[in-house]
Image (cartoon, rainbow over all chains, first blue to last red; front, side, top):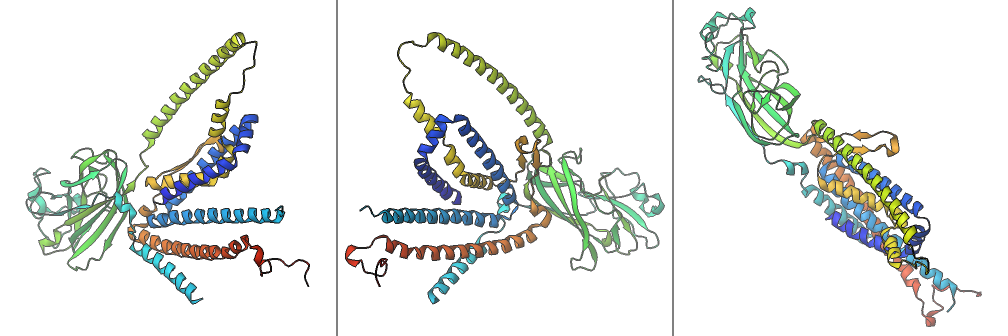
Length: 102
Length: 390
């Protein structure tokens, strides 16, 4: 359950970020392909190592604690995602209002 | 204030209740059941055989002469009692067949309880617990480790009770094993009878339970070796593929140079560009790396298997492997459940505090949303900044 919710959240965040970062990704991929590949391989290596490491230590924890920890992390991610998004939107609206073009 | 306090209480106790209701022994889902056997020495000799230990001639009593000459499996009658002499007896329980679906490289905790006569005690300590799937080939069918052997008080004064807890890791899948009680040398327990007037004191009863407690990595050496061989083959194949690809690229380059049109330009490959941009998103991958880490974490936790952690030589210069750790084996089920309960309650408390903090944070956003739109006719309200006045 927690994993399914997390996967949905992850995909939504990735799609939104992809849309916003499309120009930067395109620039990097087109003009600096080697840097793009380096960033991708570094990201994959670090995420794989850290993910497996975290999983190794979480696996030592008792089973019920593991289950609660899954939901705790999911809630934490959701909370910060929503919070940062709302604050970002508010900030943008305040900036637009401060321009007073209209 | 009162409403918030009630809300906090509600959240906290609700989550506490959830934790207490949740089943604590998740690993028990792996356990397909426990089984036990029970044996009591009988005159027929089935299941247990008393016989004099020929190697202990020093205490050898002539009263056991009626056992001499009989084969090992024929057994003897109840040993005679002689109050004046120490008597040495050996007992073996090789015929105890424990029917259980043992899986290779899984860890099974076997707990055996013994009851022996009040004036009888094991000569050797600790006892061994050889395991076999037939009458031959003890111990080669798996590894057995004694975790504890102790005498305990079971509330009866007319006998002594011993408890042996061991860990069995079979090398192959077995539907049943033959358990023998004895030391690791010759599969028997030597008992010394000191003084007795009652033959019942020599009666031995044994009961045992088996429980699966997870998988083991103690016997993965052949698998690792095979994996290494497979990896070497894959490396060789990849090297050959790379060489072939290089050759192909050279050929393609030479062909392009010779066959490229000299007139118009090649144009812009929009499809290739779009595909390249959509598939390669390095900055997005970098920003979503924490989520990727958590995704890996969730996948590993959901797999519900004890796994090791291997750091490749990309970071250290050599491979570093942390073995699988199953703390339940060391703490025992009861203590592990207590630890589970305590840590769960602590985590639920933290969870509840986070929920309350999030609730406060989101409710405080209301003022910001109110400020987002200010109607013109309400320009003198309290939210509008008053420039140039008073």
